[in-house]
Image 1 (cartoon, rainbow, N blue to C red):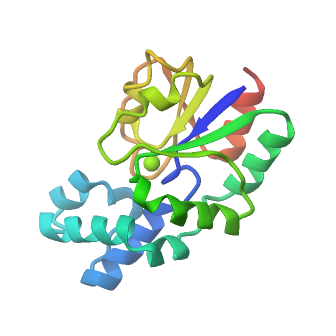
Image 2 (spheres, rainbow, N blue to C red):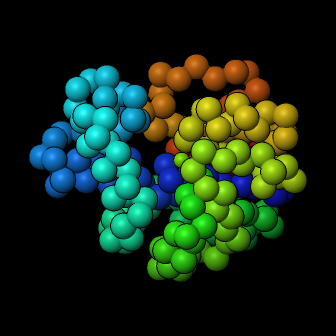
Length: 185
Ligand SMILES: [Mg+2]
């Protein structure tokens, strides 16, 4: 099957690095469950301006990506899927300017998978329309893919557990759960 994967929050543990950045930049405790912009601001953890700075840092300054760990079991699971004959593709909302940095991160983790950078705020629908499956940690992005991709999974993260998703979207608790759900399709 053709399987599309989001990068941040599915392969790379960007929630962890946002939390670390809040501590280093602003000496603030930002739990991973609160890393979404609206939640961080609504809970008075960061100001609007601080969150903007944090976003800019995380997504434009490559040194944060270098420090970003992989999500548990993402690397070995991707390799297992490739080994079983699936075709993987990463579709991220990061800007194309950051492409080589993501490619270096992937190379460092021995992952060789095609990468598409659509840019922040741009729909992934055009890039994802030939896929059989897409996996994301952002429910809003998945809702936009319902018409285009037959099987959608929201990858559980502490910051998306409360989100209600339409019935067309399944949930994957972690990589083990995702693999077993893909293999049972
Ligand atoms: Mg994501």
